[in-house]
Each structure stands twice: as structure tokens, then as C-alpha cells.
Image (cartoon, rainbow, N blue to C red; front, top):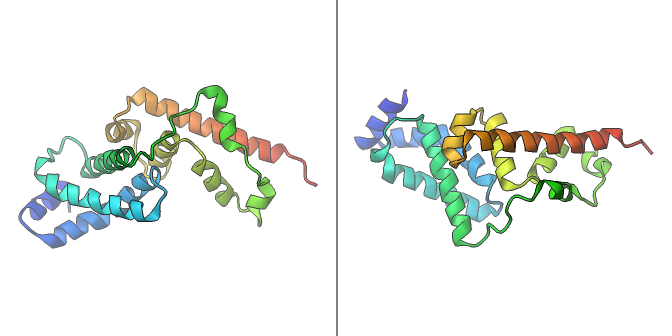
Length: 185
């Protein structure tokens, strides 16, 4: 079912269609919110609120973008507003010369890797990125969104999206190179 048909059915009162909309977009919304909110209860509440807001605002959707992009924009803005309201958004992006401090850790790569699980190590590194870097990286690589869609969702200019994606990749590459260059004991 395409976006127009789905929206039309929901606006006509078909709750099964709204359940379908939730099912199609719940992973995207959860992913968006999880990159900004770490508290599980708050995460769940925000995700529910996003779909309530989508339902309330669906008549305003004008098909200028994909429905999923519109929903992701609502999720992003709602999560940011919740953080601001709760004063949890305390960290801005650090200056370039302070980026290395994000990766200072007491754990050695061997501790983290255990059974040489590089995926887990990479996930931990990504989790240490500033929220904006982590969000852009996730939207691009995990959700498959393009620069323009990410810009629409976050309100960032396309150049900023590209810059954040470049910086996030660079930070991850440097940390992985350091790990690979460390001699075995």
C-alpha cells in the first residue's frame, strides 16, 4: 500500500491502517529516539507520543516528502523538545581538538572484544559519539536515508549532514586503527 492510500484510510477512520503505519515506522522512530534518549522509560514514552502526534497531525501531511521522512522529523523534534524540557540536553558538540577525549576509556579493546566481537566494539564506539554525529551516522548507514532526507528530518543543511557524517566516520576509523596497531601481549 502506498503512502497516499495509507493516509487516506487512516483519515477515514481505519484503525487497522494506523496500526500498519505504526508497524512500518516503529523501528525508524525507535532508532531516531534512541540516538538522543538513553533512559528506557523515557524512550518508550517519547515513541508513543510520536505516534499520537502523527495521528493528530496526519491531516496536515502534504506529501511533499515521504511519509517516513515526515514521521522521522516528528520523532527527532519531539525527542529534542523532550530533552530540552527535561534539561537533559547538556552536551554540545565538542571542538575538533577535543574529540579524542570522547574515546578515553578504562577498558582495553581486548576487554571489550572478548571473543573478538568487532561489531560489539564498533557499537560501543558509536555510542560514545556526540548525539548529532551518532544520529547522522545511524540515519545514513542503518536507515538508508540520503543527505537530503537527513537534512529534512534534523533541520540541518545538507553540508552539515555531510560534515557530521565525515567526522563520525573519521573518529571511528582513527579509533579502530589505534586498536589494530596495538601490539598483542
